[in-house]
Image 1 (cartoon, rainbow, N blue to C red):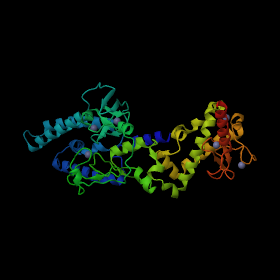
Image 2: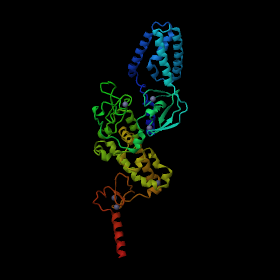
Image 3: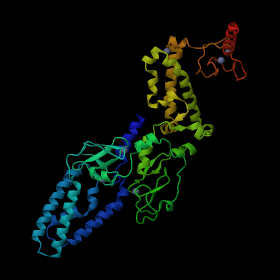
Length: 440
Ligand SMILES: [Zn+2]
Ligand SMILES: [Zn+2]
Ligand SMILES: [Zn+2]
Ligand SMILES: [Zn+2]
Ligand SMILES: [Zn+2]
Ligand SMILES: [Zn+2]
């Protein structure tokens, strides 16, 4: 559920570069105003107010970048209106005058703009497969989205657009043939290992001063285009391939137990989001030292270990199967399979305390079934064969030790180290020897 929420959030909020805070919009707003001024200056002598409006609509490019959903329909209508007004103006102006020539140019611009917004073909296939992306045609008309290829707004009302069902890459129909980046979903399934060096920078020179993804020339001075670093790959990208999205970086978590989100490029963002719930981190191999100073990790390791000890009870107990007890862990299937693999989501939830809460609760439910509620499971408890005293023991009880050979359970105080002989194992060895003797 956590993962789905994340994806939904990712899809809703990340994809519109124009959908930023007010202040960040200002430089663009400023540009629009300048253009507006330039255009009204050009037509300062024009008598009618309507022609001013015409130019405003046609020239101020950023006018069309305003991210207001309901804006779409009226904009296209206004664009059509502006074209009509422009045509009228051309007839009214003196023939061959500079102003008439200018207006003709504006008319061409306006028509191109309208053409650009409209899609040529109406009936495009519902499914298209390109570079392992599986693109499915979107029906939604009203949402404001941004094309991952060209970084401009997708006008759902008149433009056909597609979303990849694997990685959520979304794109204008007209931009699909220019896609160069294969689907990260396949990367997630084929190469499911994280980069575990912290921001492994190689330097702009080694990238030939080009974007690591699309090869656009870039530099840190912003000439000809701004270079943005991705904290996950360490490489530099252009502003089309890097939208200043932020994500928690696995390498920083593993090495520093650091969860501060860092700026990443679009494709890292997609990859990290898809990888988030996958249990690919073998903590005790990658950084065993972490267990020495992150208490929460030790607690989770113990809970997971116990759950694995409870599992054999559940898979042989009809009642537990019917109550679907193990399904309580369905969001973290790997917890039922092993106790050493972690997903990045697990580590994030450990740091916030969420995992400890939910896992303790599950642990309590499980223990209650085995020790209190279910007679069948209770019958599979152990009596300490070393002291033959006290309550029935279970392997996940805190004060117990388990024989690694035969899984018999003892008080920890009775079976305190490996030098203790397990009576059950000893009995079995005796029996085997007897059988061998009999055969002679
Ligand atoms: Zn596009
Ligand atoms: Zn894809
Ligand atoms: Zn690029
Ligand atoms: Zn049971
Ligand atoms: Zn004992
Ligand atoms: Zn034993």
